[in-house]
Image (cartoon, rainbow, N blue to C red; front, side, top):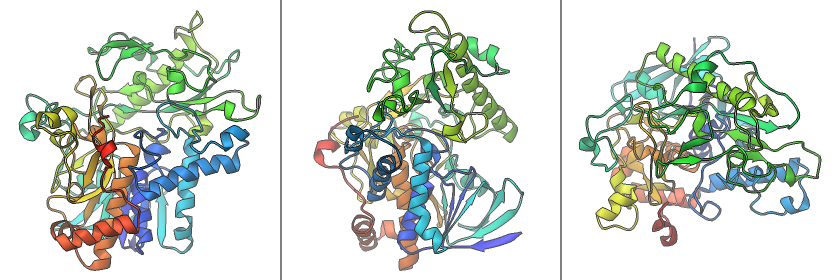
Length: 534
């Protein structure tokens, strides 16, 4: 068994893990970064989810490195693709013209940009990236993580990694569980958190947000790309949840805010229109009209729609066997929905089935055509020195208390903005989708109550089941991961602990100045955004 040492071990190569690595590298530290798939980038790449972002993203509300990531994605298209002059000259080029984001794009483009950002540090051996490695054991010495054992999927080889600081950037907070580090899963009660939208009765650890196995499609009318009938198709084609207005496979779903039934079709207009309110245009990641006529036969859209949200059972707090069963059922749900669309879905122009829908294996680089990793919305969450609740960010609860913006945190290490958006849950609860104010990320939410050298780097920070709904999106995950990498490097560079930084005014001031001056962090919202609910 091999043993490796480094300054900072980052377990999980999603957006938070990559951002943590970049921060630590820029501040002079060495890094080992592990990832269980063969793609870095997490929800942006391996999970194939175009970025969900706030309306001010082009001007403020993210770190300089996240802004660089976005700029380089646009630059990649300008450099590598035969864009029309109009598209090439569009400062705010949206490669897919999807309406969920101002930057809908192909996952592999983000992967290429992430590789570019890490390339200079890899060449000088400042970072070692271990793909297809997952954590299998954590050794604790008192209140410190002493070592993390990683296993290579292909060979079974195990590596013991030792580092002064460990960042858990796994999608489910796996290091927390392996190390017995205090954490929370599922939904808290109102008695525990005082939140308006928390559970009114007892907490439910197995009440967790739906997961989704995404996939990419193009559309070639007149051709037949129907996949084989999935084994679980008969179950899923007739399934209806008690809170759903019709069968889950259909064009009638639930409005996330009002919970009223709504009709949202696959096509409500031409597939190559720049903007139409339908599923095809929702998360479209490639827009063929950005290129000379006839060069590309179809747009490409990313399927992350309500029909493939899986809420039949949770992924944490259950046995490995149960988790595997839920993962396979989620996979079957996605493939069954595709088969239904190809064979039985009511068409916008009459008749049934769209056999011309083609599963784009190449877009996600997998054999089955589904994303490399399931899309995770909710993970284990650390019991933190400070926990962000709905009382800090929710519009209704803040207004009840007489405030017109989110709580201000003196230990801010970044900002974010998104609605409190909880998808249907494994407790068969419908959406919880409520307005929130643009918020800050407090350093206290990155500090476990006991363990001194473990930091969260994904969706596992000190939030609740409710506030996870607004702290879980792309730019926020990047920001909190970058903050985790920065505080670990700062602690090593100055001979202090992250807890000392938070609780010592002059250390905190020095750290926040460094975040702003060296890494280009935004620590507070301008008033015009801060008072604008989402």
